[in-house]
Length: 247
Length: 280
Image 1 (cartoon, one colour):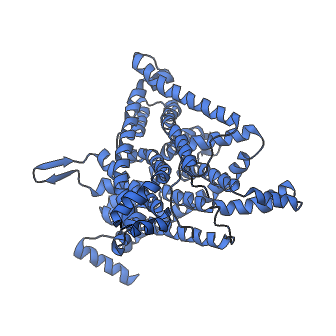
Image 2 (cartoon, helix red, strand yellow; image 1 turned 135 degrees about the vertical axis):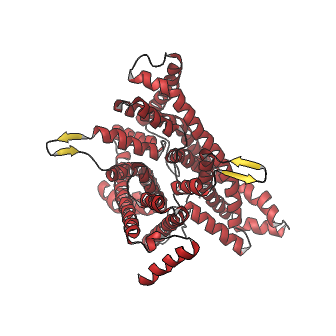
Image 3 (tube, chains in turn brown, green; image 1 turned 120 degrees about the vertical axis):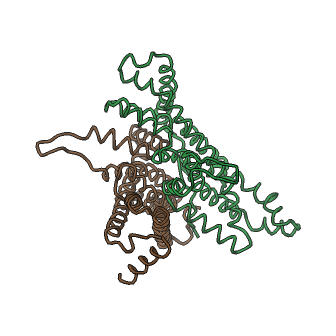
């Protein structure tokens, strides 16, 4: 890192443009830790929200009216209220209720955990709709063909509907996941030391707001571009000739 | 080829459905009506009740409700203005994205991608920190209070989303329409104005409304930067009262406000989506 260190130190001395994390080991350490935490949070939320989406879509399609009503209520409520207020509700209200003393010390979920729960639950409600729409766009003729071939109900679901539905819901799922990754920055509000939070620490210490702003923007744009590319590749790979995502 | 076209989805968007099951529909309607009742009666009660005499939770909430409502008004105001600016700028940027001049097209694309892929919160931070607190043009001094800066930050996000919708809409019109207009000696401008835009307007309306839904859901972000909107006032009220048991009712009241405003819009969006859907 010899050359880079020196170059950016000189840049600061000569022009005042101060990318501290490129020459200062302490700043670099916390900035990288922030990036790692953002990636962790994003990964956990992606997995959890997909699980919620799959389970929710299954419950949505079930014969029981109560589960159906519950899932619809959940989707309507969470999609029509602001994620930040939800995050505060989870963290301050539920977090407060879930804090109690045990013989071994105070039991409390961390800020990170609450951010992960809140974002997963919010984007889970989107994924339920994504998967449900995917299931609905499977042509009826496919199901009828499977019936004619003697498939049982469960088999039809597992071997015919789900593989197609997954492909159909991929574009919408991709959009949701992109929004999710961007929304991990909300965790800043409850002091989770993700990339925005550590950047704010750095710019408070070093007074290099514009440099840090540019850096975070580049970080997010890069991250999202990589994701979009990966999702696009995945879509292409799963594509069935003759079926262009249900459209 | 499927592109990453973000019809940034929101409330009951895309191909989601209006509740079909009777139980679900009844429950949702009941929940909505209940929220409306809460949102309307609690501030009224607060306006009538003598303030500060009793210490019941409901009384305390009622006491603060008018102020929270006022804060929510700022949320709505910010959403209207930012959406207006975002739409005007976004339409321009979207048309620039299909420009025949290649550098214009590329610049518009780059701007769209940059602002679309950056979290709104970060754009807000940029607007807060990188804009001066007032603008001077000679003698003319325009003050830039935090809420105005927040609006500018939101506008950047909305501009990029609208730009993408406009690009998608314009490109969804079959090329034969462009060619026919060209054959009839329409200028590029007239082709857009008289042939293309009228055809894709309807189709762009539902995604535009989805963007508005994202907008209204983003407004509480301004609270992080100290704008006195609904969430900020709710939090101040809770800390002023200093009673932890007030947390749940206060936050639920605020959530109910947003729900009451947003749910009808999302149902309406859905209806438009159905009506304007292009059947294949």
